Image: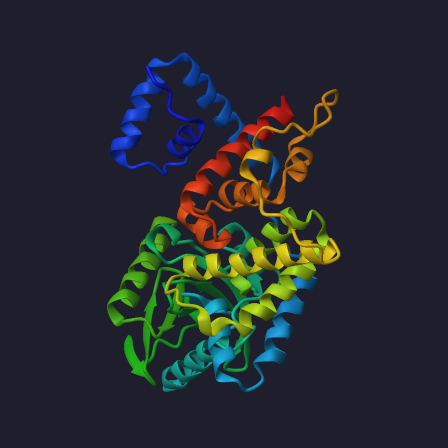
Length: 251
Length: 150
């Protein structure tokens, strides 16, 4: 029996062979003690690498330097601005959690709220404004808000559904300090604002379009949400359903 | 670039083997990225990451050449490097050390694959070497690591 080359065996373990080729190698390895040993040693190596060679976090000082570098080099050049947008944001959805939202806000506030939400969303697309805490890990993003808000916003990652969590930030909307969570969807951004339901205004339409952006508004058992994006309404609706499912699953 | 900054720093750190150089490489690379964005043709976040990592990788290679005082870097010889055992035959080294001792060309494919989870095609895009070469280089890199750890 001819052994597959080491490179071929590696490619098989890396999931890089076609289904037909993979079956051939698999059949051989199952019947070959030597190749089984090699396979096991490679799997052990992989496990060792994954436990001992971690992905690293860029130091904050570097993050700030790159951020300010981009700001200064952007100047007014639209191409660089576009570069920053596409790279920095690369398909993102921002979820903004409102903090300390005023109780008993008057009627009609819904409309100005929609403007505030949209303004915050658009401002977040400016260079360096997208996230304060940049992480795809909901267990990093959620605790980041501790001590910054008087509630702990629910944070989910929908990477498996094509809406990866990119991070979060604090922002100002309606004169209040608010928090934002950033998600990705291809080249698009969705901003979802959320705050405790009892502070909600509850006014205005649940679906809207302004300046080419779509806005959705809904409430869960605990929170009121706004989602903003230049994403198509259908996909924004899909994202909304994911949020709703995640919320009802955690209750 | 910010969403890819951790990935960029990770690659630069493993390639340069120290924090200060890694930070300089990433900063340099992000400037280049802003400058050369017009050449970017990708449409997905993964494209953006591979594109930025390629710039980081090339910047790290440029830095290495500069460190060598501008002396031309010989073309990487797969065969010459394929079986050499350059570790201390007495001491067992840890994985970090073993990786740090690999030639840059082996180190980068390993980090891109094992630490950053790129596909062979993406590694090929980042490093500019054909997929077949990525495959054999990765396999040789693993073999050398195992030898060094044995």
